[in-house]
Each structure stands twice: as C-alpha cells, then as structure tokens.
Length: 110
Length: 111
Image (cartoon, rainbow over all chains, first blue to last red; front, side):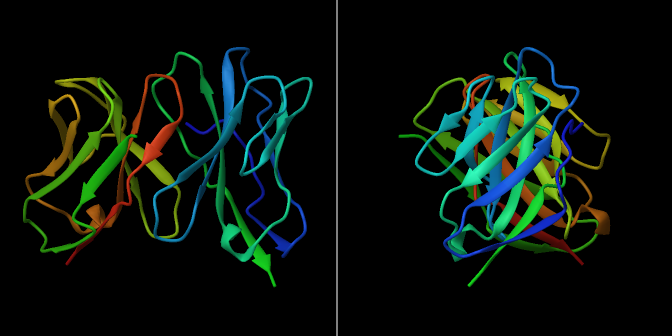
C-alpha cells in the first residue's frame, strides 16, 4: 500500500525549476524515499532516492525535511521531455516490494 | 550492464484464451523480480514478486499466476483471460533492496 501523498497534477514552464512535493508523514526510520517517473506508455524510470540527507544526481535533486515527513523532487531546468507522471515511494531498507501511488502528472509548458 | 527484456509489446487476446508473458533479465544474478499491472489512466498495481527461483509472492487475488523457472526469467500466465485483465503489464527487477528497473511493458487488450 502506498504511504505517500502527492498532488494530482502540476504545470511548469520550460526552463524553470520543477518542484514536486511528497508527504510521507508515517515514514519509519529505516524507510527510504524513492522517486520514479513514467512517460506515457513506457515503463517507469528510476530518478533518485534518499534516506535522510539531500541527494543530487544528473537528473534531479531530492530534498528531505529534517523530520523526514515530506520531501521535494527538484528538476532544475525542466524541458518538454520531463512531462510525465512522477511517483514518490517509501520503502524499507530490507523490503522487497515497491508500492506505487497515483503520482503527480507534471506538464512542462513551452 | 543489466538489461531487461519483456515481450510482446502489444497483444490482443479473446476472452477465455490463455496468456503467457515473459520477462528476462541479463547482466545480474539472483535479482528480485516483479510483475505490475496498470489499468488505463490508473497507477501501478503490484501483482507478484519473487526473491528466488520458484519463490512467488502474490499481492492480490486474481485470475493470473506467475512462475520463475530460472533465475532471470519471470513468467505471467492466465488459463482464461477476462475482459478486466486488459491493461499495461510491466516487469521489473531489483538487486535486493536497491532501486528497481522496469521493462518497456506489454499492452494487453482482451476482446
């Protein structure tokens, strides 16, 4: 069962930063926050994950609040190709399953 | 590098016919394997996962079954398809508790 809450949809202007929020108020100490995205009719693509500290890779940055009850995925310079559904998932370090919620549909506008 | 293969990409099957979808992973050993389904306009639903050969965990009761005859092969089956089995089926793998990687999916339409 998904343990996260995300807005249903968001818009972002091309070239601007896209900030996608996620609430996970019941997260446990051993649970990681994962982000995936799914472009229409394709399989989900892994973006980034973190436990406590902020993380950055070539795709995005992940900001996790100090109490770990929420996080924000940042796409620093959104492009039209970033239009997709973005999923926030919490998963224990020893867990085998990934449970997806309904995600946020991000539309990047020219 | 690791790759995941899933086929066919699209499939149209009549109600009552059998189903077999195959997924194979290359470049890794003893992966966790997953089958997900996505109904039109909906989120991803975890159907089955496997942590080893012959070990299958079912997440929801349904008309489908899964098997793992080899370490890197995961098969989704049905003896008799229902209209409600239509959807986008995705296979994924992960190395234990690390991130999961997905195949490109099979779009199944039951008519």
